[in-house]
Length: 137
Image (cartoon, rainbow, N blue to C red; front, top):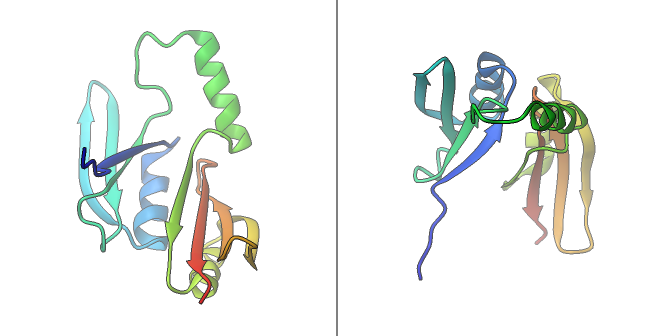
């Protein structure tokens, strides 16, 4: 097999707020904006990875989701434990400062890790954890 990642999905509460963050703060390219059956799927991605789409979707898209599962998803999102993305960068400190200036919720300032990277972490407007890492030279 020779598999390649094409799409990953991340739940967001507000697509306009997510768009402002992923496009304007992180510099992602908007690839698609689909509205159907009262729902919206917004695809963004890194400029350097035109074949990878991050689909920003509603927290619950399956109409058969039970009320208990809807509550569980809402609780996990509120705790920031539902979605995560990791990005690599060439300058974690500069990128961190730009994201911090946007008002993003900082979870971890840049620090050197024993496994060979310098990384940081923050939350997007929906509470998803995003990590940036830079390989140590």
